[in-house]
Image (cartoon, rainbow, N blue to C red; front, side, top):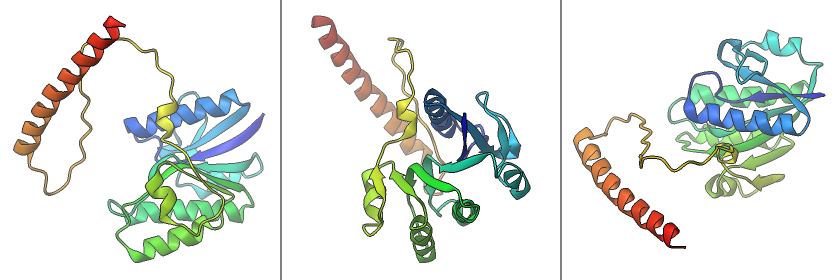
Length: 210
């Protein structure tokens, strides 16, 4: 069974990135591949072997076990929250190419990029990879000159869950930012909840009539 190494923001107990990883691991296994994941502190996850995402030594130890490196998905190519994070992913791509591995960027988003050097470095690095699949139209159009690129989707959307009609709930995922007004946001959520419940009631009633 051919082994493939996966890289991303994995092993940090982030719901969105865990969903992305689960979908990609499932896809690879279903198609006859054995994934190895670069994770925080080398933790195994979803029954898949993990190695430390920051240990060059660990990666070199398995360099002869795989031929392809897949980076993604998620919003990895941004420098607003951390410029170091972007540099890490760019280094990882370059490092894998130096090891003569095929590199696939899989369902990754671009932005926000607030530094000109970030845009320049990202474009220069992406030109080296074998295949780029962006998760959204904005990211796809960000570098018009880039070749070998395709428009994909958010990997988490490919997860197959058993659908059940349960109580009507809204899931709100918050990210802190300095201008957040909690009182106004709370009011917005209450209005949103009322509107969504009205829409859900209409949809469910129409379904029952059919």
